[in-house]
Amino acid sequence: MKNRKKSGFTLVELMVVAAIIAILAAIIIPLLTDNRTSAVEAEGKNYCGAVMNAAKAYYAREGNWETTLSTIDSKLATDVSANWTVAVSGDETDPTVTATYAGDDDYSGDVILNSDGTWSGDFDAD
Image (tube, rainbow, N blue to C red; front, side, top):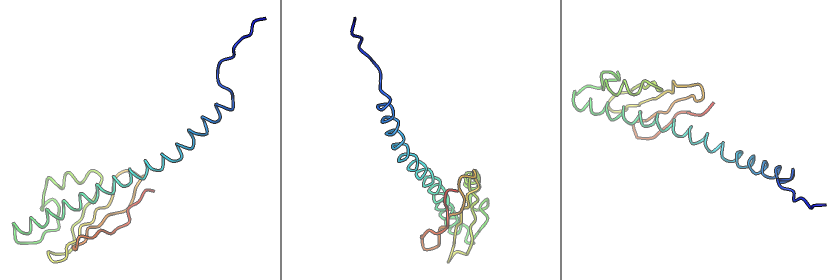
């Protein structure tokens, strides 16, 4: 009789590989989700900063404080409106810019840029 050499993987080897893949997936998937949440929040903060700068520039140029985004900068108002609703409040001595997420249902909340440059709000993934 000829001795045949068996080839392939045993069930135990396949189970070990499956367990390793499951462990790696359990580590990586939450990291990717957190990164997306941070990126969306950073987008809101970026818009807040841009709107605050535009409002201050408008005040310096026109001499009056404006809270209507389309009056402050019509191009910026168009760029922001995709996923965020941005509002300017306060006056030239104590301005606040609030960006509320209006995109998909995966995220909710807002980011707020205060007059002293600090951030507040409660943005998070649902």
